Image 1: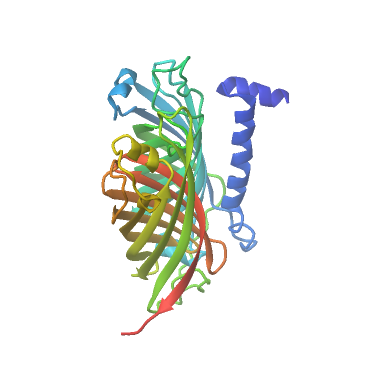
Image 2: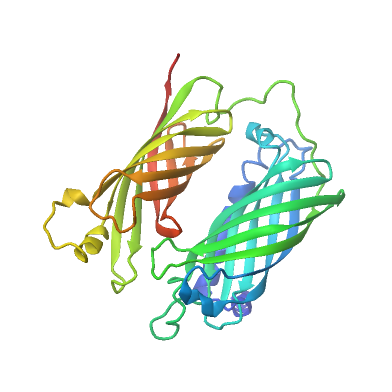
Length: 395
């Protein structure tokens, strides 16, 4: 208990928030390493790296109200990562990426209104170009963040970027990495950190922090040699087998959101989708997705500009989008760009964007986490479940 209080004081967190971060960190870290260690041969090392990193950046004033917080500030980051070496088929397809868990911390500028940010996120770093001692990598990370300050009508009314302590954290990083020694890697590059709660609690302008970054990674144990085989590694049930088929997904999404000017009133969002995607290779799928959604906040928005009666079915919004999916065995990342085919509410425009993570629980059932936006404004973050099947065809 004394240790927890000491850590709480250092991070300026409420005790509940400290315990929450610890509780989140442990299962994510164990999930990241489980399944990779348990099936390894006794002579294969865990391929672990420890990397401290220093960043220097600023808050993007993407709304006029944010301009009063213009300032530059440093941030620190600590990562524990595992370099893949081809034990699974997708690892060699992506040129042996690095998978890890990172903790990010910063004072958000000079204003006391902003406070600190603490973020914890799993990440995967894809090599764009790779040589023995030189690499260019793209890192994608997503997790949770705790912001010590948020909007408050009485005590912090100027800070209208974030309305909740708990937020989603998204990290993008482009880096150059140099390996001067076997146990040392040095890196530099650019990263973007984004915090948002997906309008679960308003206001929710979000925080965008671009930074220059530099780090040093230390290899904790002996490096495994890449597994290179003349015959492809065995396929799992989740991987593309090279046959012609369309991957069909039928799924649902549920979300809760606020409008920002309704005194904390919350609205429910229900959405369903059907997607059909063609596998181009072991890594990529493209296709189309049909969506139909019902947003409880649309009636409130329509009432501000429309006094004529209408049927409730008019609140339903069908949509059609182009879809791209990046596949890593049973996990996939899906990106959609679409437009609405109908619906009475036109306040958000006719186009929308979706980004989602789909995870196959078994061969056919998948869970999804989806962010929907209208240009640069988050509409909602939702969760759901669905069913997929393969429709074979021949031409």
